[in-house]
Length: 288
Figure 1 (cartoon, one colour):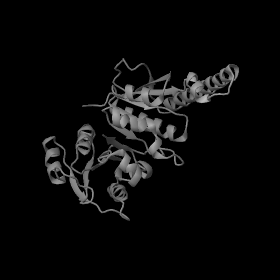
Figure 2 (cartoon, rainbow, N blue to C red; figure 1 turned 90 degrees about the horizontal axis):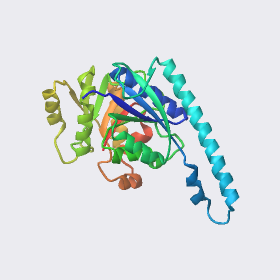
Figure 3 (cartoon, rainbow, N blue to C red; figure 1 turned 90 degrees about the vertical axis):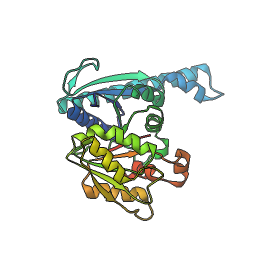
Figure 4 (cartoon, rainbow, N blue to C red; figure 1 turned 30 degrees about the vertical axis):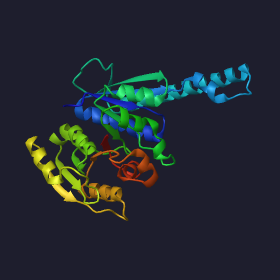
């Protein structure tokens, strides 16, 4: 399956700029369309948050200020989109036209970001999201987790800085779970055109299910030649060992399942998914 539509929830942050460049790189690679989606805050949502003790006029003023701020932010994000699209030579046109080349469009809608994004992601082949900000708790990145848990589609977490390449050398994290099997399925089109594919496994990472050697045989049936490598945790962190192994391979794309354990357990105890989300500095494609 080729990638034809990429969804990009777009913000005006530095991380958002890197995500935009990453999404445009994916579009050029696959001759796909990028739908850049900016979700504006609904000023009507401010009223319930205002609480008691405020007059109607004060609430109205607060809603007006929120609307102005939201509109200003949307204009700034639109300007950023147009600038980066022009710099990268991507044609701006509507998604319903199949141009056979990289294209992009911009949409600004009002609503609750995680709800709007997850619904739109269900009809996208891939959703590219910005890397969590360094000063932000990764557990509160609602749009990212909404797409992971509720869209049924793969998510590409962009690195904090635009990658030089993507998908030439693919590291595939394997632990035998249903989530990692979904990651393999999503990565098949990428692996078919990659220069090299390496399966990364570890005793500490493996769960009940097929081993890495069986995965290697499965990929061969799809005409994909891979290689096997094992890694060890670093300072008892499986995620740190996985990222180190991906870097040792020179990977420009890491594909993996997300949250084999419950998200609550990972938030309390940590886990491979959380470590990679927080510390990953290369494009990471996740499936749940």
